[in-house]
Length: 249
Image 1 (cartoon, one colour):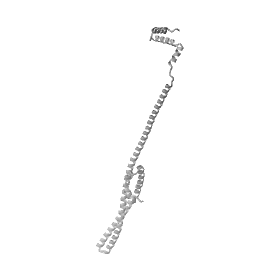
Image 2: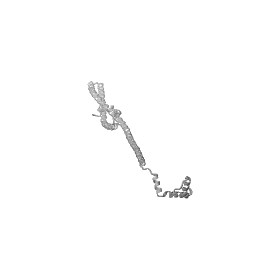
Image 3: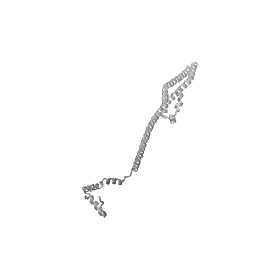
Image 4: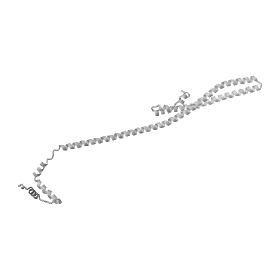
């Protein structure tokens, strides 16, 4: 399909409306830009030839009209000279040229219209390309921001997961401590109660009671806490206080 035959499609295309309906505008912009660049290259390539055709047909039409005017002048001069036959020759020639001129004029107007359309297509394509490039930059910027936001969101999710893991670890740690405390408490409950009487019996069995008392009294006297009183005297005083007889050895 020639570029001129696509004139209506190119001129009626609403690039922004098309892009707004696309699910992937960024990809569509790249494709559309390539197509528009190809169309613009074709327009530029054909414009020179079409403009040359416009100039050629206009020159031919103008040259033909000049011949019409020339033969009309010659017919007037022939009549002025009194030569009617010569005047008829010039008039017949003028009429032939005028018939040819009608076709030449149509060709010139068609070539002119083609040139106008080429310029219109050129300007439209340039506007569309500039608009697409502007939107392309905006879309790419938006995509970059969107990707950065997605990365931030992913990092936030990772941080949330790490925080959740720490919280879970703290719970596990607390549970482990609680189990340890329970185990220790159970171990204490399972211990055999201390028999104090048995311990004292061992002490007196070895004769260590009196010696221990004497040693304790001596230590107190040394530290100035109480006078050193012989243990035997204290025991005698206790017997007297109790109005009891000493136990024979």
